[in-house]
Each structure stands twice: as structure tokens, then as C-alpha cells.
Length: 260
Image (cartoon, rainbow, N blue to C red):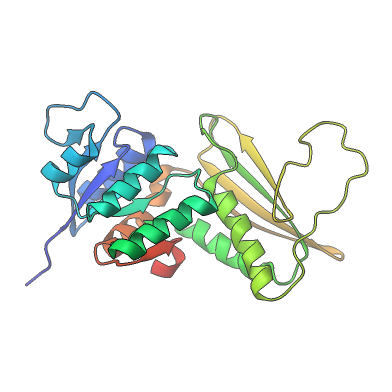
């Protein structure tokens, strides 16, 4: 006997990532697209809902893929967990306290959740390789580039990368990252933002899906680890991995790497 298909709903069903995810779910084996959550004007087709409780009651999803906007995403995820539906979150904008709130909700309910700043397999490997390099270089800068319409900066991937690099140094009992000093900054923001001693630079341009480069500097050498997504299809393999893993999760998973 084969296990029944996983029933999956999508929050942000009309967005660019939402529509791409729905197409991937409909063509994948072992999953069923159960319905979508939209902000307003739900269709009469029976698969779109503008209220999470109605979506859960009528579509009966086991997993909810979230590609909405923060902070609404956090409210949706916490409500889903309380209702016994496991969120797979790809929305950016979460800070460390928000992630801890999700972790606490999973611990309290025994309902799992996957939080993934980036679902592209190459991006996950880029962060993994960068974490390894963090033990060997004291200076690092992150440059991320996304489409002009992206609403937040830095990206969730850049923030997650910075947190992981800083954590890697701390775990190895190494000195925190330090930025090379600049004696005279001629324009505000020229050195970008800073997270845990790591420079973070956000570019927004039309024609771009996503790009991130982690640049390390040492004595007489540099190391650059970069990843590019040319289309949103690059994220779908990771989304499906997370969806298939989520059905039986009982705890919080931060990042896709643990599921690979």
C-alpha cells in the first residue's frame, strides 16, 4: 500500500513564487495541490481562499507553503502550527526573535516547520561552503542582488548567511569578523550595512532573479563563493524536498541543508 499524496496549500498563491510553486506541485508525484491563500477577492473555484481558517477547513492541507510578506507571514505560520498544519516558509524579513517564536511554537505543539531563506540547492551549498571558509578568513563581505521589486533588504538569504558565518566563528572559538577600516567615507552607506562584523550590500535591478556572492579576504588572497538563480524554477526542487519532509516533522528546521 502506498502512502496517500501530501495535501499542500500555498499562501501567496497569486504571487510570482506562489504561481511557480503551484505549477510545480501540480506536476510533482506524491503531492496534491489543495488550495491557495490570497489577500482578497478569493475566486469561486473552490481552490482560493482569503481566510486561513476557511482554507484549512475546506482544503484540509497537511503542509502550507508560504510565499507571502513579513510580518503577515509570521502570523500565518503561527496560526497554521496551532491548527496542526506544517508550514514551509520561503518568505524573507524574519529576524532572530521571529525564528525563535516559530521554534517555540513547534516545541509547544509538536507540529513541525521548515524555514528556508533559499530553496535553491546551489544557494544552500553556497552557504555551506561559506561557513567552512569562515573558519579560515577574518574578513568577509556579502553582496546580494535581486529584482527591483523586492520589498526588503538585505535579503533573507544574505541575513541567514551572515548569521551562520558569525555562528561558525563563535563555535570554533575564533575572534569575531572585523571589517577593514575606511578613514574617510565620502557618501553615507558606501560601505553597506553591517551584521556581526560582516559587510552586507544589497543591489536591486530589473532583469534579475537572485544573486549572492560571499567574498573573503586574507593575506595576499581572496576567495569568492557565488550563486545565481536564472529563473524561479531553480527553487522548486528545494520546495518539494521541504514539502515531502514536512508532513512528518515534529520540530523546527532552520534551513534546507538538514533535509538534503
